[in-house]
Amino acid sequence: MEARDGKMQSKILITAIVPAYNVENYVVSALDSLLNQTEKFHEIIVVNDGSTDTTGALIEQYRDIDGVRIFHSRNNGQGSARNLALSQASGEFVYFFDADDLLNIDFVASMQALVSAIPELDIIYFSGESFLDEGCRSEYMPSYDRKISREFRSGIEATGAMLRRDVYFASPCLYLSKRVLWEDNGLTFMNIVHEDEEIIMRLSCSAGASFCLDKVFFKRRIRAESTMTLPKSMRNANGYLRTLESIAAYCKSKRAHVAPIQRDLVRRFYYLLHGYFSVCKAIKSRPEYTRIFILLVALGRFPGLRQLYEMAVPRSLHARLATVKRKLCE
Image (cartoon, rainbow, N blue to C red):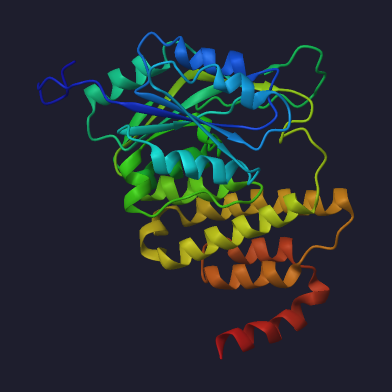
């Protein structure tokens, strides 16, 4: 296919990365949706993350298929499994996929066509949709419509546009990214709950040319006992806080770089703090206000941060936390 400069471009090589844990009822249909693409993935790396059901045995049935690579690990978590696969990937682009979901058969062909036309792209964001697993009843049916179809000169510009339109989705199943983008910026998933929220900010803001495509390729299964539907716990609360702390540290270290989208980032902090407080309320745990205060102080003079502080920290604690701030600044 011709690029914008008129030169012929070869098809890009895409590595699919699939962590799998106790998904014996879904992993076959998930992997088949990757293998049945109209254009093939360069490779499909599956990591059995210490499953205690028949997931490992089902995955092994794919071992002899050309391009499929299988690893078994202890149950170290989804982030760790993704990092293992990422370290083994050889494709120019990487795509993270969950072993209980489905992918449209034209995904690879569509991504190849877009990158062939715009070779400088670092990352492509696209739409997804939810569907209920058989027998599952849930009022939680998230929408993943991007509502944007255009190219952006930088990841910063794309991030700001998605945040402003409320179409900034953290799931790594909803973007395709250059492998070198991960390597050059030392990006890996943290081994926490909500690790996708933590990584997407650093990845997006590190990208160059980016594209938002309002077309559905990914289909998320809503089922019982998934990460999204399980009861919340202290791990969720800690995951939110560590995510907030990591993003705050990144924004502080890249203050000039993220300056054009500071207001948009504060909106995301509000979203994450709301999630944290909701979990604390659900599990009847007192929020760690001092940690919240310290990360807000680290951000400095972000527009809208004062309002965020007033929302996040009870007025009764303001005097005590002012002392904490003085000590931090000494």
